[in-house]
Length: 368
Image 1 (tube, rainbow, N blue to C red):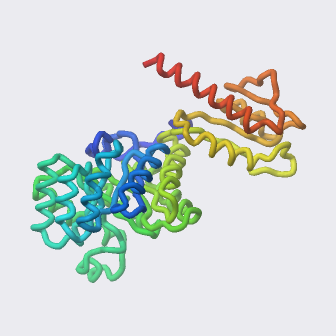
Image 2 (cartoon, one colour):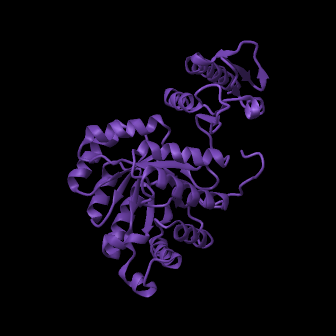
Image 3 (spheres, rainbow, N blue to C red):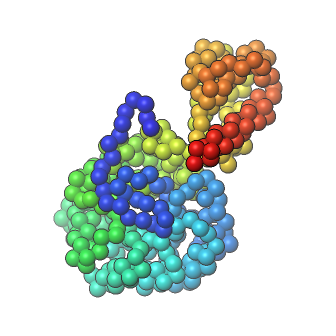
């Protein structure tokens, strides 16, 4: 939890995607989406397993054809993480995905066709007790709403969402979450703020089609952080034109910074200057790669000189403060007797981090 600010989260209903709780103050879950061809079952399964390794909670899989639905059936049997079937246009794909074990559906009711087809999806979801995400997107609003507002506006996105919510309510179906995404940060944030005051269902948040890794990370971080600081958001996805694994990592980084959820090592490192006694950038990059498998949250500070190094080291679980040829090492704020040779930092610090993680995990297991 953040030491200086308590984020009061918006009250919402709770639903479950597989075993993952969403809403009602449950941990904010992180989603991603496969970008392999769903019909290539081996590649898709491999990517899902890779996403699981970095901590994804839920994975969405596109089902554009009936052949993809048949592949989804195979994929579902090979992975343990909950899967969402992403459906557009053809309601029969939704029905088949439910039959094949989808833990949730993502549909845009506006492009499914008519209410009869939507009601068939809802009836089937209700029978199988699986939730649906109503996914409204600024790029695919209904024609009559676009005619009314002329361009996508926050009010237009919210009106589209409310229309579908009311229809679900008429069908006595309440197991759903809602998203009102846009690629424009201000448009998306304002739409979520308006919608969050009107409904109690969980909200899936994100900035859609955010762009390349760097630009998309910046846009997503700004938009999602604004919402989370307002207490809005029960599950999220970072939408990047990059490896989906990066989406999960960025998602955790955002939650970690806001004190909402922690996973893995929080590296505190200086931006470097001529005072650095070792190659900080290379060491941090190497350690991040080597220690990606760690899920236990700890703070590790790697500072290249004594200006801020000692202070940061005393506040971290483990800390390194740059010195000439050898650097001072701290554990739980206490300076240790033996220094680390600068040319051996990567290997020695990795060992010390893993040993510390082992102790923490053993202690946590004893408490259980």
